[in-house]
Amino acid sequence: MPTSKRQVYDDATYHIIQKGNNSQQLFKVTEDYQKFVMLLKKYKDKYSFELYNYCLMNNHIHLLIKVFKKEELAKLIQGISQAYRFYFNQKYKYIGYLYQGRYKSKIIEKNEYLLECARYIETNPLRAKLVKALKDYKWSSYAFYAYGQQNTLLTQNPLYGTFSNGRKRKEFYRYYVMMPRMYEDI
Image (cartoon, rainbow, N blue to C red; front, side, top):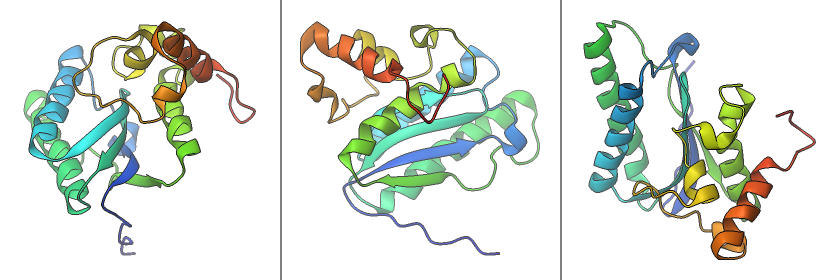
């Protein structure tokens, strides 16, 4: 069955998900995560996009990005995915599909969902029980928003400013992220 054509627009924000084939690990050691972050930086210099939030899990990737030119979304994600696949195949002498099909992309049309999607992305390590506290997970954007940790990869989420200012903003953000939702169990 043929895949449907993506709905892609200029100046649009997307939640991108790329999964490992059969839930296999995409990142086995720290060096793998570092390589992927380096590729994100490299492609950020090449294409015009803003990365608001991200989380690199061992078997999948979440990115919340805004692209300015619709034709660059596919080039950007394919470029990063192919470069990482080449690195992974070389390093681990791997043959076969690294990813489970095409990457998924969901357009973020409402401001309310922009923050909730960021929260969903950043709470992945808790739901997967990889850490007991989000501050302990190194491979996400959480520390940037919750504690002010420098991260040149990120552009501040446009709605982050709604959480007051200064130190209070970080505190309110931490509260927002950890506030229980009826639809999940963290």
